[in-house]
Image 1 (cartoon, each protein chain N blue to C red):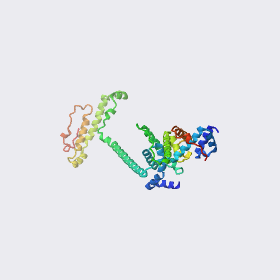
Image 2 (tube, chains in turn yellow, red; image 1 turned 90 degrees about the vertical axis):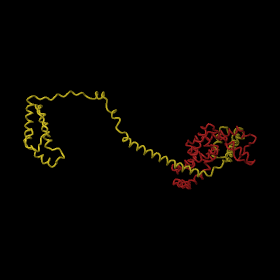
Image 3 (cartoon, one colour; image 1 turned 180 degrees about the vertical axis):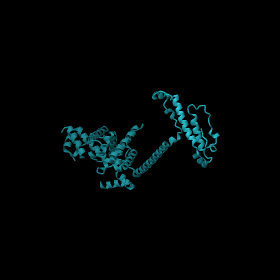
Length: 214
Length: 187
């Protein structure tokens, strides 16, 4: 047997937990080869040393120490979970309250586009032509409106009187309100610019309801 | 194995007595590994404590169809490697092999041999040391060690062979292996 084969066979014996000195072939080789004999002897010493090797006794309280550690770890985990929960609530509240705590929006001015941007974005519109009427059209329009006002004025506003009576002084009399509206219309008619304005409050429609307004 | 499953089931139901029983059942073997890995009683006890805390926290992850010990030793090995890494980071880190209690004169040689073997173990790489201790002291199979260390079977075998070779060379350097005291024996 060669030394290499001896080495393989020795490791195999040790792997199978067999005493190398129970293998005749190993022993035969070791008796002839000093280096391999040293190896076999070294293995024997090593295994003997491991067999008798005693470690200091382990503390018998280790079980209770482990349980204490588990309990303290669990308590720490619970505390951490509560802290995280409280933080989450605080953040949620802060986010919810923030818009109310800000006051008027400070970012509206900044959000508004600048004049330059507006100038670019706005398409210039051509100016609208001024409405113009010919003199004949104006006169025709004035006559139509006048006829309409005459028709309205000829009818007494007795319908409003009953309402004004019930309302008393709590609202402005409807007859005055309508008179004022008609008067304004009459005075804005083309060609009526010089007409003397009528102050409805100066006249008592209640006492002169039947007289034409215009 | 069946009683272990029952014990684990009780532990999962938060039964403190069962937890204590589980720790008591395995603490010696776990401590043996941790002590061999760390060579220091306090560090070994801390590692044992860490190991069981993790074991009990993660007990639900243990596959009851597989052996418990490889899983347990995997956790213990990881704790020991973490402790060794921390020790390396400490500025004044050094390892003292704790002297064993005084022995009678006829036990003196065995005590010295034991101390030499422990010194030799400290010189091994941590993963080689763990594999060696699990095989020779805890008598786990190669398959179980490979599972515990999450390494291929061939790698574990190589590590153990190398560990044996390095230890024998160390014992020779320390003149523990002496020609004069040696004669082959046929068993």
